[in-house]
Amino acid sequence: MSTKFKYATFVLVLLFGITATALAQSEKKSIRQGNRAFKSEEYNDSEIDYRRALEVNPASFKASFNLGDALYKQEKYDEAVRTFDEIKASNVDNAQKANVYYNLGNTLYKQEKYKESVEAYKDALRLNPSDTQTKYNLSQAQRKLKDQQNNEQNKDNKDNKDNKDNKDNNEQNNDDKDKNSENKDNNKDNKPNNENNNQQQKPQPQNISPEDAQRILEAMQNNEKDVQKRVKEQQAKAAKVKVKKDW
Image (cartoon, rainbow, N blue to C red; front, side):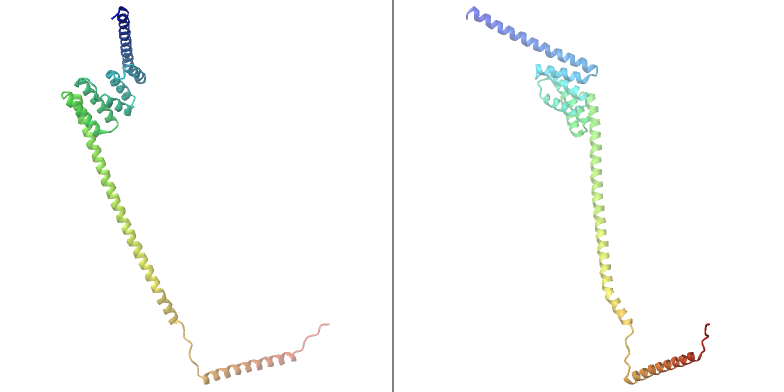
């Protein structure tokens, strides 16, 4: 191997080392800045710094873990859950993994996903059984889960009862409707009977014999002659009266 080739290789290794060192320093610097911002409760700024560190080293466990915390503080729970999920299988010790599950449990708890939160706390305790804070949070999540299940059960029972009541009311309404329909039909059936009764109550014409008819006709004629006679007598009297003459 020539001296020139050895020199070139040395330069490349040196440059690579310098670049790697610079990148590592840049990653650490961004993480430190993010930690300072997080401590000052400037969670949005800390998120930006942690993301810068991940641009330098996407596999940085520390940057990802701290980013999840910054997202949690900003109530960006969906993003925080994704971040913690992505680093659950990281090649780190059990204590660090337990912290990931612990923070994941807290984030799920905030989303009221109590069943998933309980499982996350249990995973944390499998990795770190002596963590009293995780045990406490697990008991809280289990209590919330039980309340949630009871509320859902009560809601289902109420819905079923309401559906049954509605069904009973509908059946009662249908029964009333059928009864009204029967009454209407009965009234309709009674109508012809009433009409028949009315017809039966009308006076029926009586049959008159020819002799009775003749007598009635003669009586009417005699009455008419008497009337005409009285009219003529009145006219005669009126003709005899003197009328006073005007001068």
